[in-house]
Length: 202
Image (cartoon, rainbow, N blue to C red; front, side, top):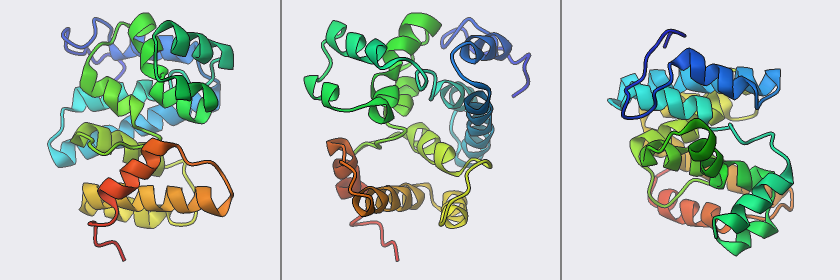
């Protein structure tokens, strides 16, 4: 996608360049560079798997839109929008995905539910994810700036079988949380149960 790219008016009246400018006001340079790498990865995967490339571009760019907001913004949004009160027991790692669409709708005026769901699920996963949501989940995990044990296998699987890649990421994320005595968000467990046991992962 070039900066001059015009998106479908049904999704947003902004050009890509205008959307980038708004996102840049919310993110530090390293995070801003990350979302552009996720976008590029997502657009490539969308082309491969027959998914709307405009939606992949937008979802990739906005997935971390709320990542660097103050905690109080999330707390206020959870209460004002009557979201699940259990969210108050979590933190930015969960909030920026699950609550992020509140800010995307209010500030960017993007209302496409498929895009918003891709944002909601990009860290926790979900029992059901559209191909677009699967793409954003994986693009965030495997973008070129990522460097962790297993990332090359994740990249290989993503290019071979999107659902299998989702299972791989979910399994490895859960294993990481357990190994580091971290709390597990309930939706992550539901994602594991939905995607991993029947996946035939090695």
